[in-house]
Length: 414
Image 1 (cartoon, helix red, strand yellow):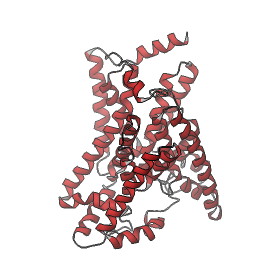
Image 2 (cartoon, one colour; image 1 turned 30 degrees about the horizontal axis):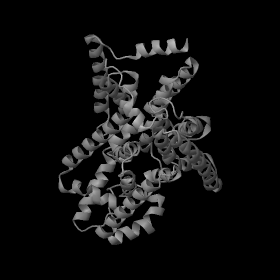
Image 3 (spheres, helix red, strand yellow; image 1 turned 60 degrees about the horizontal axis):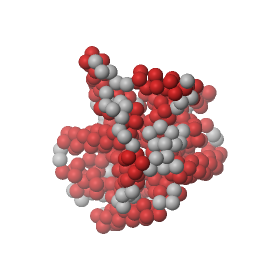
Image 4 (tube, one colour; image 1 turned 180 degrees about the horizontal axis):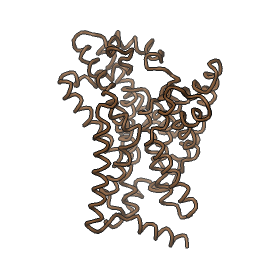
């Protein structure tokens, strides 16, 4: 009976065969993208990409990268020197060309990651992959973290691209696995936990590759700007005041959470205890995911944990929650238990609505009371719930090895 229910649901979920149905899907895509393109540009003033641009221009004219501050603010460049080396081409063109390059690279990187995650789901369920990719892309584009990534001109999706290159390489058994993670960590330290993921899942060669790549990139930074490299690794790295206020509502990390809800004397000790518990849960679940061949879940868990344990996790950093959201949705669609299916899909829809809504910003200036506790910390609370609750070994990666998946017949296109 359960199998019949699932088969019926599968039939309902197939993409439209008729021309009017396909036109309706394309119209939805156009409307969502139109809203995205109309609302987003300039809302955050391209703040971060402007800092990247002016920093590398200053460096190319004899300045030091950590001396530049955006006029009227106390904010400047906060990434390792290797990041400035990678961003140096922006300084060779005009501002509008640099902005176009940043946006194009962000779109391409996000599209690649989405395709790698969505295509296996579409193939297994018999969907037309391009309809699936288009619709999920629209749902992805309107998420608050994605909107902020574009409007700030942030590099989050480019870092995800580098990390998920290694996701693909790991599943293919490529000897180049680890290079993308090493480069991403050298550009911005947030993805460093993915190196630990390789280590705790006993991928020794890949771990050494990632560490070697990271070390090589750090050395490039030292060669390019030795004094600024020493300053970063001995001073700037440890000075969180250069990044922003820890209790500010946009910081949806464990440290931001404890800073908002606890007295100052208690926030750091409690943060350390929570961080240790989160890392223990992550390591246990990651090893389990790797043991059954579910690298997608392992990477999704690591992305969530990066956001939780990093001292600063701005809302735009939460693009790392997307893989976990897709894992949750795929497990719901694949479940043969009708009640479980409904629970998982309802959870997916609820988290998506929450991430679209930008709910946390209602407590931008005051985060006290029950509303501030739950609403103002809603993103970090969702990440905490997903860490132990996200399904493993279900959906598109049910413990199959890459060889087994390659041998599996592709579903018929519709």
